[in-house]
Structures are given as C-alpha cells and as structure tokens.
Amino acid sequence: MAVEKQHTNPLASREDVATLLKSLLKPLDGQFEPGESGITLGTTCAHYGPDIARMEGLSRALWGLFPLMAAGEGAQESEKYLAAIRAGTDPQHPGYWGATGPYDQRLVEMAVYGLGLALLQEKLTNCFNERERDNLYRWLSQIGDAQMPDSNWNYFAIMVELGFKRAGLPWRREVIERRFTKMEAYYLGNGWYSDGPGRPKDYYISMAFHFYGLIYATLMKDDDAARALTLRERARLFAQDFITFSDAGGASIPFGRSLTYRFAMAAFWSAVAFSQLEVYTPGIVKGLVLRHLRWWQQQPVLDRDGILTLGYAYPNLAFCEDYNSPGSPYWALKIFLVLALPQSHAFWQAEEEALPPLRTPRAIKEAQQIVVHSEDSRHAWLLTSGQLELNNYVNTEAKYTKFAYSSRFGFTIERGRYGIKHAACDSMLLLSEEDGYYRGRRECDEVVTGEDHIFSRWSPWRDVHISTWLVPCEEGHVRIHRIESARKLQAVEGGFAVISRPGATQIQHQDRAAIVAAPNGYSAIADISPTLCRRPETVITPPNSSIMFAECAAIPCLNNDIEPGLTWLCCAVAGRVEAPVYSQQAPRLIIEPHSLRLAFATGNKDIALPLYS
Image 1: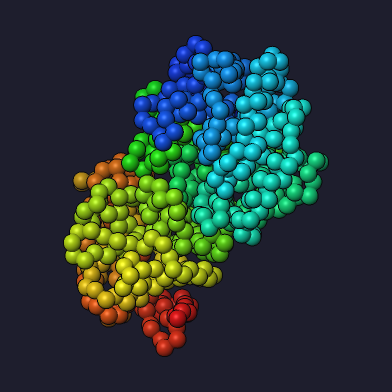
Image 2 (image 1 turned 120 degrees about the vertical axis):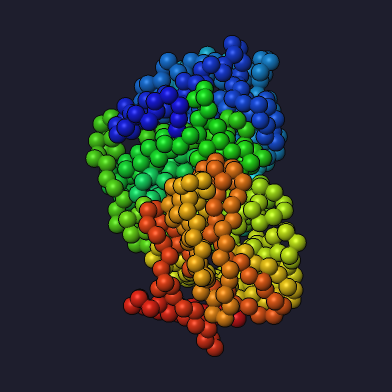
C-alpha cells in the first residue's frame, strides 16, 4: 500500500490486521482541526462539494474504528472522531452537518453511525451527554423517510434503525420493512441482486447488499428470525459464486464502478466471518481476507503522507466517478469488520487456508457473467454481457461493457475522443467509419447466458447489428462476431492490456496473431475467422490509461476492414502470468445451417453453440 514499511507487516494475525488499520488511521490525525466536524484529505472535488466531503472523510474512517472500539480497543484513536461527531450533529455549532435533502450524500454516510450504535450500544451512547445523544439521534433520524435512489441506499436507513434498536433508542420497524420491501423487488435469485431495478450486478452486491444483510441477520437473529434466515441463505448461495472473483494471490477481478473503494471488494468475507455463515471453513475465509489485504499492501495506493488516494492500483483521477471525493476511498475500511471479533473467535484461531478447488468456468446467469480461473488460480477473469450503468458515470463502457475483465491485467479507460490509442480497445471490438472515432458495445439488445457461452446482440449504429458469442476455454476465451453492416467500417479488436516498458516488453506479430510478453504477464490474440485474415498490430496507450499500472499499456489487436453486408469474425484471446500463450492449436469456427461449432484439434471436445435467430 505504501509508504514507510507497511510491506513488512505479514498480515497473519489479528494484531497484524489491527496494526494495518491503525497505520491507515494515523495519517488522518493530522487533518483534524480543533472544533471542526470534518477532515480535509485533498483538494479535488465531488459533485456534493467540499463541506460534505469533509464530513464523508471523517465518517468513512469509522468503518474501521467502530469495529476496533467494539473489541475494546481504539481509545487513543477515537476521541478526535467523537469530538467531531458532537460538533457535526449540533445545530448550534458552526460545523453542523445540516438538514439533508433528496438523494443527499450525507444519507450514505449515516450507515456507519448505525453500525457504531449496533456494535457498541451503550459504549458509544455513553460517550455523549444527554443533549449530544439527542442531537445525534435527531440528525440520524432524517434518513427514515428520506428520498433516495432505489438501490443499495435503502440499507443505509436499515442500518440506522438497527443501530437505534440495539442502542435502546426509539426505532421504527416500519422503516425497516419498507426498505426491505423495496429491495426485494430486485432480488434475482441464487443470492444475486441488481443494484436497483434494471441496474448492474457489480461489487455493490457483495460490499453493500450482503455485507449489510449479514450484519443485520446476525444482530437481529432473534427479533427478525425469518428474514435473518433468508438473508443468510442468500449470502451462502452468493458466496459460492463470489469466491471465484478472487485469485490465488488475493487479487480480485476489477469490474464496475466505485473500484476506488479498493479492499471493500472483499468486505463480504469479513461479514461472513462476523456472521459465522456456514459456507466455507474459517481458515478459507481467513485466507480470502488476509490475501486480499496483502495484495493491496503491495500496491502504491497511499500518498507520501500515508493517505489513501483516488484510483485503483495506483492514484488515478481520470478513472474516478463524479461522486468520489478525497475521503471516498476510506470505504475500504469496511473489510476491518473482522476486528470486532475477539482473538478467541474461530476466524482468528483458524489456520489460514488456500482457495478450495473451484469449478470454473462458472456461469452466473443472474449476473450475465462467466468466471474462469487458470489451472493454478493465479489468474481469474470474467466474461460478461448485458450490464450498463444507466447513470453514465465516467468511463461507464470501460467499467461494464468490455468482453472480459482480469484480476491480473484489469482494463484500460478512454483517454481521449480521437484515435485508437485513446479508445481503450482492450477486450473490445471497436468500429470506426475510418475517421478516427470509435464505437463499441454499449447497451445490448439481447443477452443469453448459457453454461458454456454468453451471447449478446448489440447495435453500434442503427444500421449495424452485431451478434457476439463469448466462449471460455483453457487459458482464455474465444470470441465470435456476426456483423451485418450497411456501411463500410474499420474494425479493431483487442486482447488484455499489459505493461509497455522499453527494453522489458517484447512484441511479436505472427501471420494472424499479436503476442505481447511484458513484466506483468503475457497477452495474445489470434485471428481464427473462417473467411478473412485480420492484420495483427499492437496498440500502445498513454500513461495512466490502465487501472492496474501507471505506465503505458500494450494491447495486442487484430485489424481489418468490414464491407457492407455480412461478415464473420472469430478470435482466440489468452492471458497468462508467466508463459507464452499463443498456440497453433486454436479452434476452428464452423458455421452450420442452424448452429456454430468450435472444433479443437488437440483432442478437446468440440463446442456447439446456438446460432440464435
């Protein structure tokens, strides 16, 4: 993560994890001003302005501090935060956090105060005198009937009411019932939700829906027993899919928005431990949490003062959403919920275990994804179709609509409007009218998720219709495109993006394949189209276009012209950690009257695919 000597922390014990949390909180101490109700962590801005951002930065640190306090620790760290809470909830104080409005960011931050009240109960309320306690209660009570997005936000009100109940304060069951009813409308089955009606299935399902759901189920198991059982069973089903999103080294597959919350990606496993959910052994769950933290500890995500930056695997503002303020990344501290568990708990007593044997490819029809692991699970990737964040946040297409996402190689984002090197062509088929401006898959007209493929139909222009099949196989996947175009186009299709480093990255173009060997792995794309031969090339993107590394990225690509009429394209895409990836034994595409067939020459069973009408 960082700065100083955090790499020396083995992250093997509860003490190690607590030390990591304290090392993340310590740099925030210097940002407090006497009598203030927030902390300033940077000069960049979100759409809700700097005052609310200061309150957000303060509040998000509490996701780590409250669990620490629940275990009887954190006294040294807590007093500044408690003083700021007293000021922020006092209507007579200049730093009062104020009345909230519809869709207000301050509603988001209220959830952690619900967690604090729920975990600490009188340990927290006794930190305030009667007036201060009433101020806190009145300020938080605004959320009960607040107008907010029909999404995971409903859980923020539930968390506050849960906190009220657990702390012996007046609470409203009808608020909880109403919010759960709203969220029930977007339960998809098999443990999966969408983040609101028609919205994506991304990390908000793990770090929000199931994270809060397991906390609720644990603390309300006697008062809301039927719902608690339902929430636990849904989380158990989800866990069996979600475990495939982690590779053997602790990295997760980056996909979707809000990735700047970083290790919140694995907060679900902390909630699994907290709730003692019966799905994997404590040792397996412990390994998932600790390896994830170790992976992040190796990434340069802290600034020189030790403060979490905006970005993913390094600081990168171009990647962030318009609701990301300098304090936003501290939602990562949700993973430290495990610190609420005492040293005697089974999670901390267990020996860390590796990933269990996983059956991949694993089709997740509810999420329109197929997750694949390499044989040693050092690389995990997902194939996906049909998801689009309708709010159109920055780089929405890059975050949701590429063909593949990788724990090893991540993805690139657009860095400009003109030219292929700016167009984020990794894991995409991009089309241009030979004018330097490119369009790819955005919204899908149809999606079908099978056990061994994902099919999508999409139309980049009104008179250009493309059917795409994504088929997982061995160290990568095969893509098939049926293109019906009324116009002449130029097509560029990219594989995974790797580091482009002079003297260290080697580029090789064969007859129909582009192969790049780089310090972070090997990436290749090979044309196996049935009737035409595409030209191999390698696109070099600008610095800071990859979310995984700041250097330029090298993307192996295939290039061809598309004439009006019907065109079939097919390619094999692979990415590996440390071995060449291209094989002359790529499958052949056979187009039959009512189906497609991928024929393998290596003895593997042929794959038959529906042609779809």
